[in-house]
Each structure stands twice: as structure tokens, then as C-alpha cells.
Amino acid sequence: MVELFNVLSLVFVSLATMNCGMTIDDISSLRQNHVYIRDEVTLLKIIRKFVQDGTSNLQIVTDFDLTLTKQHIDGKHALSSFGMFRKCKQLPEEYLEEAKHLYDKYRPMEIDPHLSLHEKSIAMSEWMQAASNLLKGFEFDSNEIKEVARTFDNILRDGTTEMFEKLYNVNVPVIVFSAGLGDMVEAVLRYHNALFDNVKVISNFLKYNGKQLDGFKNDVMIHAYNKNKCAVAEDSLKVLGSNRQNVLLMGDTTGDADMIEEIENRTDKTVLKIGFLYEHVEASLEAFMKKFDIVLVDDQTMRVPMEILQLIL
Image 1 (cartoon, helix red, strand yellow):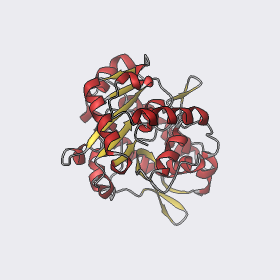
Image 2 (cartoon, one colour):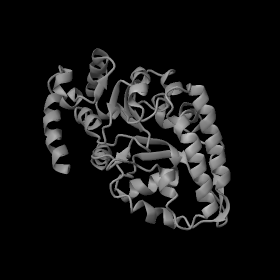
Image 3 (tube, helix red, strand yellow):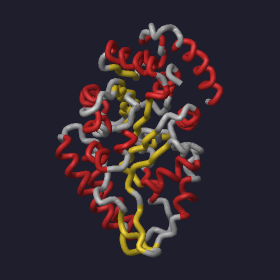
């Protein structure tokens, strides 16, 4: 995999020197059958601007669960950061049973193509509040999170670690904006050598009262459909509102496409949005195409984002 990205690097750096006169055909991964482009003219305009402005004007905003991580592995749904957390052996049985009940109730709502964003947002708020309440009143040693993270060797999309390393080498800020469990997100990235100094994780982090868990630290829990509001409330505003005008955004829900919407609307930022779609493809594709510039259907790699970034890096 490393050799593949090194070869791609040489190819696409040479392309970037051709006065930005590229076409979609110059980026071979965009011609794959599972790649859907909303508007080729607009996409090329965005990519050309990214190339012309260079790395000093670029930043990355990405979801974690099912975006940096795979959506399925060997035909089985990949676990979310909360799912990985539930592998901790010290968690009480009552917690595990109720957490599964909440997942079975709310996860179908999260990905239901027939529910409105408003309905989904209400459901996700209920889920996160219930999840926070569950995480209260029992002892927990946080060191086990690091141990559990080590058991997920293949959880990141192919090419993710290499992409993060390249972004670090050219000092491009990366914001991982996750509705998952921030403690596990950081542990997984750290284990895969992807938690560099330029990476900031904004997520739901565990709160402790002595040795006991006491829910989440956040006053407002982050879920897939309120990230746009949380972006304004978080201290990430200084990063998102910085003088870096070009943003590559990645996510796996239509809510992720809007996660910097309130900041985007009041600045002159140029945003390229890439969406990863796996479940309910036929019913969801139209909604994804309205929200994302590029939609990748059942793609468990970072090939498309990486080939675009190679033009800039």
C-alpha cells in the first residue's frame, strides 16, 4: 500500500505542474464505476483552486466512524468507536445490554433515508443523552481503551495512515469531528500512528468523578446531525475560521456534509465534500448527491481523496 501511494505521488505531482489544465480523466480514480460526481465542471473548478492555492491554504475536516474507518470488513459491518468501547471487559453487563438496546433502536433511524434531518436530529439527541446517562456510577480504568484499540488492526480505510502522514509533513491541519467516543477515536488514531500534532479531535469524551464514570464532558453532546452548531460552540472555531480558505470535508451521513455549514456560510471558504455511502444505497444516493460533490459507494479506501490531495501536496 505504501508503494502504491508513492507511485501515485510522483504521477500526480507531475500533473499538478501542468498549469492546472486538468480534466476529470486526469484523476483516474474518479472514473471508477462506484464514484458519483454531482457536477464535473464545479468539481474541477474547486480542485484547480485547491492546487493553485497550495497547502498553506488547505485544511481537512473529517468524520471518524465509517469515514476514516471502514464501513465493513469481510462482509461484516465495522464497529463504531462506541462499538469498540463496548469490547472493554470491565464494563458491567447492565451497561452492555442497555447500550445494545439503544443501538438497535436509534441506529436504524440514523441511516433511514425516509426520515427528515429534523427527525433524525431529535432521535440522535435522545440517543446521546441516554448514552451519557448510562455512563454514570461505575468504576472504569481508561487504560483498557488503549488495549482495545490495539485489537483493531484493520479498522482504518486503506491509505488513511499514509494520508495523515503526508498531511502532517506539509503542516495541513486536520480536524476529526466525531459523534463517537473521543477517547476511543484518539486511541485508534494513536495506535495506527495517525494522531499527529496537526490533528485535533472534537468528539464526546468521557467524564470522570474520581475513578467512576460520570457521562460525557460535553454540555452539548455531538451527534451526526448537530455538528454544524457544535463547530461554532467549540474552540475549533479559531481553526475552522482561520485564513485557510480551502476545506476538504469527508463524511458518511448527509449531516456530515453540513458540519461546518454555519462557518462556511459566513466566510469565503471553498469546500470540496466527499461522502462515503454503503447502506440503503438506492434510497440514499439522491440525497447524498445533493449534499456531496463526490459520493463513493462501497469504497473502503482513501484512494479518491488521496489522488486529489496528491495534486496539492
